[in-house]
Image (tube, rainbow, N blue to C red):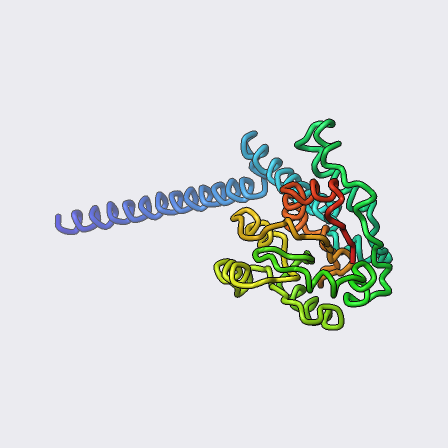
Amino acid sequence: MADDLGDEWWKSDGVGAGGGSGSGADTSDNEEKQKDNNMAEMMQEESTPVPLSPKKDNQFALQPQECFLLRAKEKKEKVSKTKKRRKKKISDILAKSEPKPGVPEDLQKLVMDQLSVKHSVIELEELKLPDSCFLPANDLSHSLSSYLKQICPKWAKFRKNHKEKKSLIMLIICSSALRALELIRSMTAFKGDCKVLKLFAKHIKIQEQVKLLEKGVVHLGVGTPGRIKALIQQDVLNLNSLKYLVFDWNWRDQKLRRLMDIPEIRKEVLELLEMRLISLCRADSLKLGLF
């Protein structure tokens, strides 16, 4: 009986083993087939391009267009900047022009053009500078001393007869303090023993100039229109004895600007002329010179 059980156990075990080995082989074959199928599907998915969504397509399509538009805009801005013309300066214009001596018509035209903005036609007739008030203009061949001797041959007589304080016989208007000092040094042969007053603001307070005018007799003044105008407005400088008014017309500074080419100076000169000088010229008591 034990043998029978043993045989049956062996048989059942053998059958079980045989069956077990058969099912295991089938399972492994199925797994290998499944792996092959999965691998094939994966390879097919990788080889097949995945279509992009319409939004992504549009995004990628727009990106190079945006960059192209920006670059074109920047390029247009650069072109417009390079094409923009540089504003011409007065020094550029004067550098190309030959130096021409000033003439009375230059001052007459300038006064009419500038004052016509704020005056009527009737008022302009009263502000017109007559031809008779002008002295011979410098033809660029004179020094200051030789020019003053030409226009004022009786200077020594005027100088001796002048006794009034707070007044001048001759006034020379220039554009800066440095130019005024240069003119004073260059007129040594003309001025003689006369008293010359520096009429500019640089390093000189207006109170000092007031004291000099009130203290003694001054014959000649050289300075800028702004300081001269301030002294007249304060009733410190009297114009009753003034006989000659000379403009430093032809001299040019480092930027090649003449006296009337500087807007600030031009404005102050015109205001100074309007105060009383034009009326003195029309009354034939004041003569104008362009040096």
